Length: 330
Image (tube, rainbow, N blue to C red; front, top):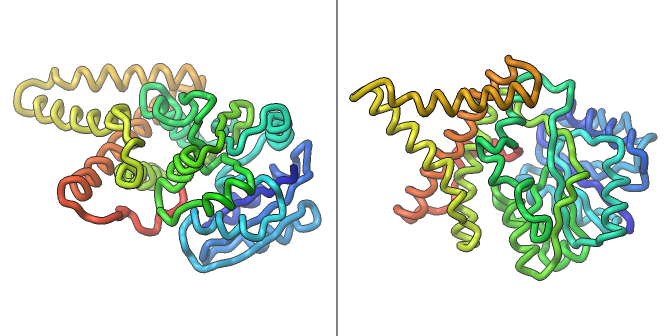
């Protein structure tokens, strides 16, 4: 097989430079790279030029159309038999491509996904956000790493599928959020195989501010209801957990004000567990403290977005929407 690495970009030139450097440092560099600039005003054209002599790289610019359509644009010019999609804020360990090729040669699958980890040079807040997205005590258990190896639902920050999959499904939908889960559902419905490759992890920088992180997870909560409208079977009881948590926080906060402050003990214990676990995992109490804040931003942001969309779409019959229209990239 031949491989094409497709990267949608929206105003992130410095992150693209780090990603391209990690691609250049791969132990196996037999692949092409396609950068699709999605209407950026702060382009990465200079970063691409710096790596033209080091990588087999293609660069195209298009009007802003969202990450799904941007990935499809890359697929249409790709020469490879197998497409790998990466978010521009990811960095690859040197063995990433060799592991993907090895696993696909031994246990071929039509589509695969891999997990994400925090790099040692990430800021403390980035490590805290990474904890909140992967921890059992937040929504980490809902995300991809907990799913079965087979019939895995890959996420677009670290995902690949064959040209045959693209030709059959016509690629990602035009959904602004949740387009990767929608894609995974359609891949499985079409009878293609999917698999989690745990060893093919990436370092994911994610958002660098809590407000940016809140916007991301808020829209993720909204996207879960949009996905339900397209694929009713995709909504599981576990997806209600952040909304239930958000409602619980509101109720406990009201009871603490109206009845007794002791109702906040449950929230304090939950926060203490997160602090202890994050401190142990990151070997740093400051990251543990930041992880408490990031975890509550994640749970409440997702929960509020979920409830927002549930009320508008399920109860009031409104159409598809997003709360932060320009936040197309996770």
